[in-house]
Image 1 (cartoon, rainbow, N blue to C red):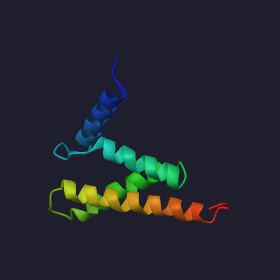
Image 2 (image 1 turned 90 degrees about the vertical axis):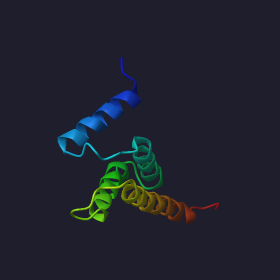
Image 3 (image 1 turned 30 degrees about the vertical axis):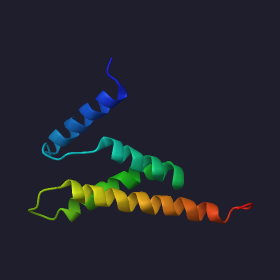
Length: 98
């Protein structure tokens, strides 16, 4: 039986192949970490929405004709992670006892 990590890596490769993005490197753990931050700091359904928008932003940052690079993805993940974390802090700042 495959582990969860093996299954995710296999799924990631299958998706990349389906989109003809075989040369793109995806840090699955970074994406999952971002999803976790969004889910806990905002609301659970923010996880897939946040990761989708971060990936879309990374794709746009690569611009037409340029190859997708890890810096574009890292930058998009960092922006989303920071925004989600800040959102969570602001949401709890007004709670009684703080």
